[in-house]
Amino acid sequence: MSALTLELTRAPDQRLDLSPLTPSLLAGLKPKEIEALPIGTTRAGLVVGDLFKLKGKDAGQLRLIGTDARCDRIGHKLDQGEILVEGDAGAYLGAAMRAGKITVTGGAGVAAASGMAGGTLAIGGDVGERAGGMPVGDTFGMRGGLLTIGGDAGRMLGERMRRGLILVNGKAAEYAGARMIAGTILIKGKIGAFAGFGLRRGTLILTHEPKDLMPTFGDSGVLDFTYLRLLERQLRASGSAVKLGYRARRLMGDMAVLGKGEMLILV
Image (cartoon, rainbow, N blue to C red; front, side, top):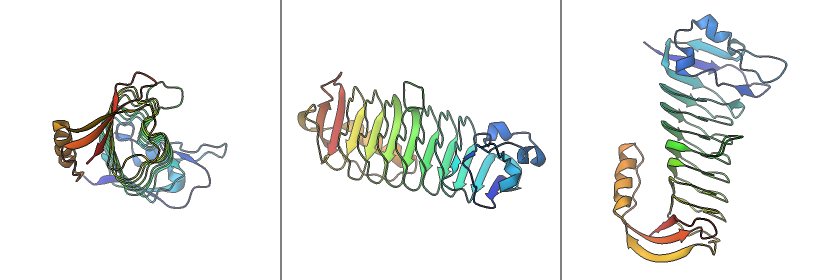
C-alpha cells in the first residue's frame, strides 16, 4: 500500500495547525474525511482539502510535501508510525511526541521537540529557539527520545531537559542546556554564551570550548570516558556518523545550583 501523501498546492495565507495529521488520527479515515479536517488558525477557517492534494492510502507512512515555515504542530503527540516532511516545518514540530519517527528535509521553527518523550525526530536544516525545551505551561522539557539537528540550533536548546539525547551538527546559540535536569546534549559546532546556565544534572558534550565559559563551573581536568565510546556506537547505530573518542576535559556545574551536571569538552 502506498504512503498517504499530502502535497501543499499553494502558500498558506495564515498559520496552519497540522496536529490532526498523524498516523493514529488518520487511520481508518476516508479521503473525503481527511480533506474536511480543520487546519486553519483564523476566523477564515481552512480545511485540509483547501490547501493539500491527497494521494495514497497508508496513513502509517505519512508524507507532507512542499510545507513551509507556516505549517505548525506537525507530528504533535505522535505515538506511532512515521512522518516524512519534504520541506520546512513551523513551530512545535514533534511537540509531546511519544513514539514513532519524524524526518524533515528542511528546517523547523521554535520549540521543536518540546516535551518530547520518545521516538526519533531528525531535522535536516536549522531549528529555532527552545528546541527540546518546555511546552508552554509545563515544568519540564524533553523527557526522552532522540532529536537530531542537521544545522544550527537557536537559543535555549534543551531548556529544563529531563531525559533523552540531542545531537546538533552545527552551532548552538546562547543558553544551550539552560536549567537542564538530566539527559545529554552533543553539539559539534561552536556554542554561544551562558552554556549550561543553571545546569543541575545531565551532560553537555562539546567539540569547542564555550566562548564565554561561566565561572560557576569547576575544572576536573582531562579524563577518559568509556561512556563516550558507548554513545558513539549508539549514534552510529541510529544513522548519525560521529567520532567522539574517549577523552574529554570535564567541567562540573553549575555550582550556583545543584552543580551535579557536567560539560565535556572533547580533546
